[in-house]
Amino acid sequence: MAAVDEASRDERVPVLCRRLTAGIRSLAIEPDQEGKYSFLIASGSEYDVLERQRYYYYKKARVYMNQQKVTKIIFEYYRFSLMNMVRDTKTFTVTDPENQDLSGLDILYTSNTGETRRYRVGDLKKEDSRRSVVKQYISYLLTLVIKLELHKNKKIDVETVGIERTIQLGD
Image (cartoon, rainbow, N blue to C red; front, side, top):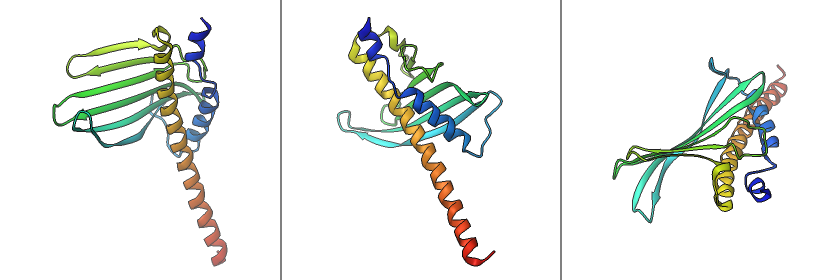
């Protein structure tokens, strides 16, 4: 049972959630009525050498907050092929974002071909599968946190330049 816990855990989660909360608070935007913030993490196209086709994709995050605390995080990865018109969507949903134990992380895979799979990290039998899904979730979370922190630092740099220019001009 200890192996299940180790493969489904990541000690960085509470720290990343605190950084995420701080990053969201630094933004000059308000959430919607549900307390939801939506972020586009990445978008573009990539060529798959094995399948010999171009895919268009996006990665989105929806972060729900209540009383200045993150209560739910949803990451969505969407991929579309113009060649065969197949749409794939993979969704990670965590309802206890500050918990190191990610065994409750819900993964939903859907495709317009009719394929649908839903599972939780804790239900996966192979330790490598659990570890792989947790790593992918942590990668998405870390990318979101870094993007928010870069935006915050860019905003601070712009403000600092404005203040320095004002001081130089004597205003």
